[in-house]
Image (tube, one colour):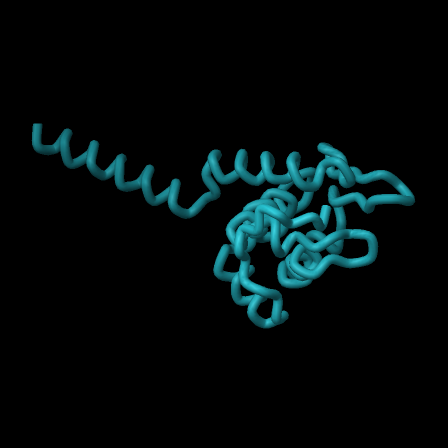
Length: 137
């Protein structure tokens, strides 16, 4: 009986360790939901964009490049892309970028909330204040 309990405990520990080292289904669905709410109108739900208007994120070398460069676009905007610094928290930006960088054939590492927060500070972008009245997009 003791041996069965030890084996069961080891299985639980192994499962918890595996869950801690890989993105959870909840994180994936949160990233997808954030993408659909904030990005899909322009970049399309498939990540393929609209040629000549909104760039594709699927298979994009830029999206799969330096995470800090991609996050900078969300924090400061670029070209016709608005910044999301007032409408998305550091956690939300990290979550949506992790989703984008690992879907549609993209194979890049995700970002953490701490990565985005440090970049926000380095860029001199005001801390996220959850401004309900933001009218940037």
